[in-house]
Amino acid sequence: MSFNGFTHSDFESFQIEGLESRMEAIQKRIQPKFAEISKQVQSDLEILTGNEMHLHIAKHARRTKNPPVDTWMAFSHKKRGYKMLPHFQIGLFDDHVFIWLAFIYELPGKQEMATLFLDHLDDLHKQIPASYMISTDHTKKSASEAVKHANLEKILTRFRDVKKGEFLVGRHLSSHDPILKNGEKFIAAVKETFETVMPIYKLSLTDDK
Image (tube, rainbow, N blue to C red; front, side, top):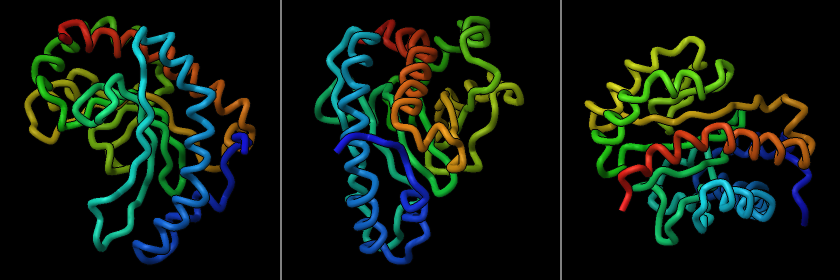
């Protein structure tokens, strides 16, 4: 199959009751689309990062009762995982698609990285478009807000000082956005987003060994 966009049934997957039934819908409707998206995005991401990038599709394997409220694919420069690394995400909640550069709470050296970002706060303000979104918790829709309304210094300070603090930056596309129904336009939007946040990703790896 080729990626021709997302449909209402993809988003409706998150309305299905029960862990097993919802996971079946995610596996059949959404995960094959993730695999197709990766074929069109991964090589571009490798050129942008200068690293080999590996695809990770969320398995939700630790869940035993509550069905997932979102699902995602991620790219990182290590094959065995992504949560402990700066990584790129594409995923869905029930009402939007998110395209993130993600620094989540499992990241080691989180305090040093946040301090580095705070030291380059002026650069980040210049690099992140006002229409982009920032999240402080990748598991909650309510933790996202538009950059133009966000206090970036406060968010990065929380990322540094709070154990569960996170920093994700990128775009939201409403489930009703016509871009989502056009595979070519969506892929272009993903590539544009990743290119826009790439300076932040590269800054985060300044001290990476």
